[in-house]
Image (cartoon, rainbow, N blue to C red; front, side, top):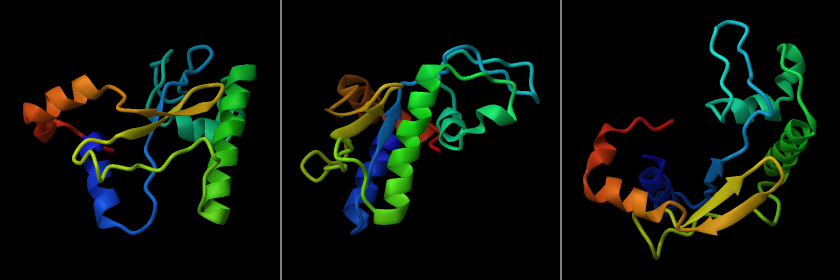
Length: 139
């Protein structure tokens, strides 16, 4: 879903568009105090929890990788909110030559951010060419 939405946005807006794919995961299972579910892998909102340094508002005890990830997001997003720029390692989506597939994706790990070209290209093209994207939920 996002792989089709992001290029359309980059064609429609004059402002810069950035797209990221998060591979960072909690250093140990993060137990939601309102649920019995304790994910051990990346999950929706993990980046927001880390960015807001919400570790202390839960029973989660971050390790050094969690703290590095939190500071990395904090630096990037605060810089963006103040200057409308991101750290130099973050690259803008440049989809005009590759529309409708995203060509540049910022991959965010616990240690760094790396801009990669055509990440998961085969999977994206399969879903796109098969029209399965109509059944995807994008958030």
